[in-house]
Length: 167
Image 1 (cartoon, helix red, strand yellow):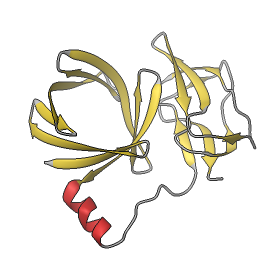
Image 2 (tube, helix red, strand yellow; image 1 turned 180 degrees about the vertical axis):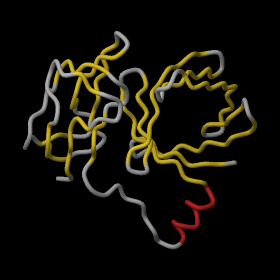
Image 3 (cartoon, helix red, strand yellow; image 1 turned 135 degrees about the vertical axis):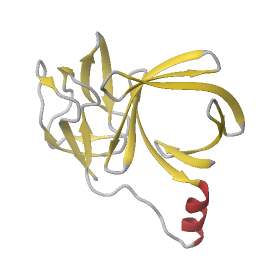
Image 4 (cartoon, one colour; image 1 turned 60 degrees about the horizontal axis):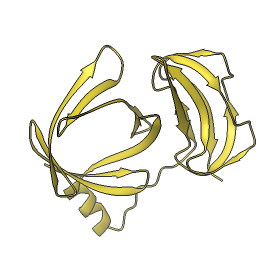
């Protein structure tokens, strides 16, 4: 089964070959992925390298927190995407971006304030969870519409922390 994953605007072809093998842009990987605990935390082994990441859905898109970097991912079936393109349709992320806590944690720092213009990749919140500090970045340029958290505040998974509106 082939899919097109758009990661922060860059298209990646993913072909699921079988239960333990995938091809990413034509390069084959041996994989094993396991969900951990009751959180959206996953352990992934790819060609004997280990990765841990949080994966959760927001507004029909996937948010993947890996190595302290937040990736916005849209996954589409290759055939459906091809048909949509042929018909001239385009999928645009509409409306404001809601930065939700990918896991329970403690807000360490909020380097933005309401009304501030931000660029794609700017840090919106530094969140500490499981003794790791994660810089949660904006996946798009825009204006900070609302800041709902402050340093020292505990947050629950899925709690909206910052709202970024289109410029």
